[in-house]
Image (cartoon, rainbow over all chains, first blue to last red; front, side):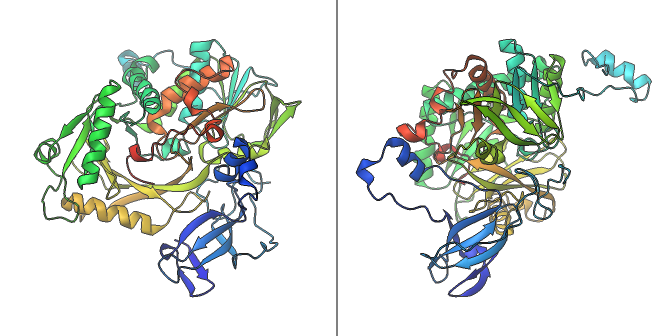
Amino acid sequence: MLLINCPYCGEREQEEFTCGGEAHIERPQNPPDLTDDQWADYLFLRQNIKGLQYERWNHAFGCRQWFNVARNTATDEILAVYNMGEKPPQLESNDPLTPCGEPPIGSGNFSTSKK
Amino acid sequence: MIKRPKKYSVFSLVKNALSYHENWQPAWRNPEIKKEYDAIIVGGGGHGLTTAYYLAKNHGIKNIAIVEKGWIGGGNTGRNTTIIRSNYLWDQSAAIYDHALKLWEGMSQELNYNVMFSQRGVMNVAHNLHDVRELKRRWNANRLNGIDCEWLSTAEVKKFCPVINTSPNIRYPVMGATLQRRAGTARHDAVAWGYARGADAMGVDIIQNCEVTGINMNNGNVTGIETTRGTINSKKIGVVSAGHSSVIAKMADIKLPLESRPLQALVSEPVKPIIDTVVMSNTIHAYVSQSDKGELVIGAGTDGYNSYSQRGGFNIVEDTIMAIVELFPLFSRMKMLRHWGGIVDICPDASPIISKTHINGLYFNCGWGTGGFKATPGSGWVFAHTIANDQPHALNAPFSINRFSSGELVDEHGAAAVAH
């Protein structure tokens, strides 16, 4: 289970939070002008990154505030917590060595030889 | 070239017994990689293997490579809870899952490999009035689609599965259940090995420990893949990489409507036969069956966040165990033996994507989410058709990636055995 440092309440277990998915997806400025493909992109298509991902979390069973988290989805390491509306921090992430390779921690699948 | 046993039979068993089983040949080759193939399948799990198998068998395309970054059946094929059923709500899903179920019924014979398919029935339990209405609706939908399904009263549930707790005094009492008798379980590893052996026998090259690092394209056509073992050329590439589908798609600058999440399962210590069916409950989130080894096989839920780490939160396991113990109080002192996670790629409508893409020759079969195992043969069957003919089979036409633009979603959240 993740330990998440809520900016308002401090470190709490992940069970108290709900994840709101990929962060920094902006609602289109001019909805009536959008094509179906643009709507699909906004509503459904996601980067689903393996590696550094910026995502939204809500302290649902705590202060109920929203905030952003930068997390490595390959290792589950939380790299930064920052407020809604802030720009994502520039981080050095421990990305997998190959595009779909396995990181040194966090995965049970060590089948690929590392360079 | 190694020598493969042509057919497994009682005679080959006796013959090998005389030499203390030391002379069995490997079930498939470990081939040299060719420069070019007629088709490449990325991902050597169940769906990838069946795709290659049916490409060779149904469509005569035999010059195929399956590239797998790990080993055959080492991903989600070896991590699921082996449940097979086809009692889905919508016509589109019912058609493809029941096609798969029919293939399961003949699989061991066809492959000459015992996949231990056991039609022990799957029971979906209702715990409140809403469940009863929802499951009865699904029961009727199934019957209209020609899929066997029965409604069991509480007393009939108790008769069918005596160890279940049907006391009216528990928090979520059993108010009835649907039963699909043709549903059941199979040995997941055997499915992978059987199809790998079958595909290999028809000339398919199974290349393990070979990780795809890039997709080569020219003017909107695929030309091949880059791998950790060099470049392999092909004009047709079928990607069947489950949890890592978005990672492969990114190599071709494609965004998919997928979220990859850990899904956990666990097995208990082995005990004598106690439960001879599969019991599933959406409301309290529990499902359990018993393997032939005697272990209880228990499925937990997905974690509520994206991750590729193949491990999930303990709270998810705890919730599942609480539900199991309420439904089966006699399991309360059993010890759990192993517990693991797999990465599942979940679509917004809980239905798969089996589709062409805007790049010629690049096909995706993904988004099976938490319930892909049951579809293994059907998925490969229709995906092979899609790759061979460059157009979808009637069964997978509704599962095009374009449905997210057109809005023709196949919303199967309700028919997932448990909510994820």
